[in-house]
Image (cartoon, rainbow, N blue to C red; front, side, top):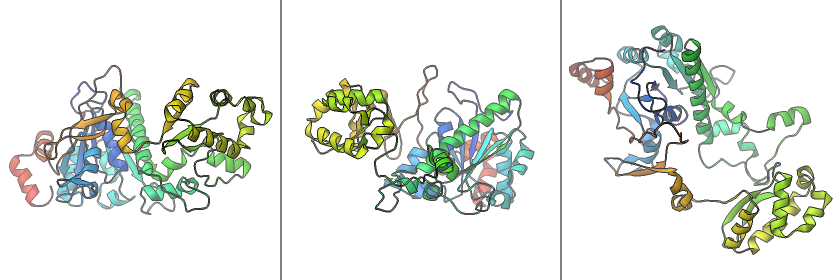
Length: 405
């Protein structure tokens, strides 16, 4: 076990200490996922300026709501890693940490004399997660990369949208968030291997584009074995026939997709389409896909003609999967979100409570951690440098005046 552990506690990851050297989204959110379940996450920020996310907005009374979400449950310290005093303080922190996460452009930490070899010399058990646009190796390693670049290079943006229009970006930073999830998972695996199997610390190399290509269904093998180049199909998907975004009688949009034969049979029954059940052209999903436009047109007409309450009753009666396409206003009012506590209210002394997505998922045998608001820049300098490293208040003040902190 790592001698540098934090204090054990009641939460799933109590006792783990993670240093967050990242900026923006992918690396820091991987750390937020650890912080949500009790790990001590120390966010290391540039003195005076802080993480870039602090400046992005939207703002309420000068506080960035983006920062409120993705820096929750963390401690903030300031440190200039480019100067010798800052480098030495970071190595002292690393000696007492389980893991460090960074998402600089490859070679940046090495340029500052803080490559993994230097860190591991100070703490042989250290696990280091490195997230970058194109990875630590390969001909494009030095290219800058961020969410939209990864979506494009990873193949997802090219198949998103309609065939007669330019490719479309997904509505949130999905490459950043997929990289954060995969990064947190890989970090947890490395820690498990170290602690349960006597392994050493190790370096994890995660490219953001790889977090996209890994989750592109059969895009690669379909091209490899069949020469299929998937094109943009709008809201149609090869595994859903029928399947589309259908307009309802009250002007909303409803998603309904059918893949399994049993589901199609239940749909035909609630629609009163016995002819579909008897039609050999529609007996299997493969055959139905050949007639997807015809099926979608008939389903669209039926959905728009039905009163919404009656439509929902019939779909529920047929045990069919469907959902209205929600706006954030719909989400905040929906009783299911409220019943499950999916949206949490996080106290903030400066701007009052902020509602945001809560800690997900929920566990039956461990208590859910109360969410602490995102820290001010350098808020925990005294606690971390004084309590953890033993620096005196006078030394902390001296380093702060010199711009190291």
